[in-house]
Length: 175
Ligand code: IMP
Ligand code: MG
Image (cartoon, rainbow, N blue to C red; front, side, top):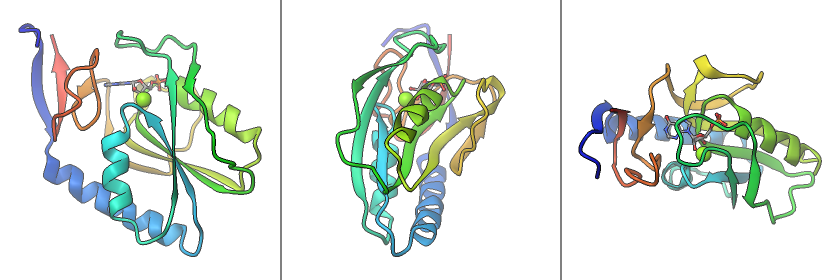
């Protein structure tokens, strides 16, 4: 680990746990008697997804996609490409996109346009963190655990240059 990076605690694992439970309960109620496809955007959302699904009281299909847009920089490049596309059939299915963090919204906007072409029955968005101030697209986030300003955060699946994903809390990263 580089010595000039500083981690400041933002959300503890207990705070995250409370929020993920609340959201899982809401999702279970909203999709009762349905079987949504949860599409988690790798890599950052894997811890969040794992916590959410274990608190659901409904059956779901789990799918993963990987989209690159960020590289190792702290700002989105605006150009998105698939490392892994959706492989399950989502035609007429209820899709719930599971994202770690929505910043400019470039990644999500690209992904939503892509899946809309496959005519799912519905699409909703579930994000661990909503970073609203830098948003460049008009997006409705249906479920979110935390809203933050412009902080760059790591931990609980989120990385900086592939570091810090294993931390159980969420931290602000500063130089
Ligand atoms: P967007 O396309 O600008 O919305 O960027 C979304 C993606 O950038 C997220 O899914 C993350 O992978 C990454 N990202 C944005 N902000 C942060 C952050 O504060 N920490 C770690 N990754 C971030
Ligand atoms: Mg991501």
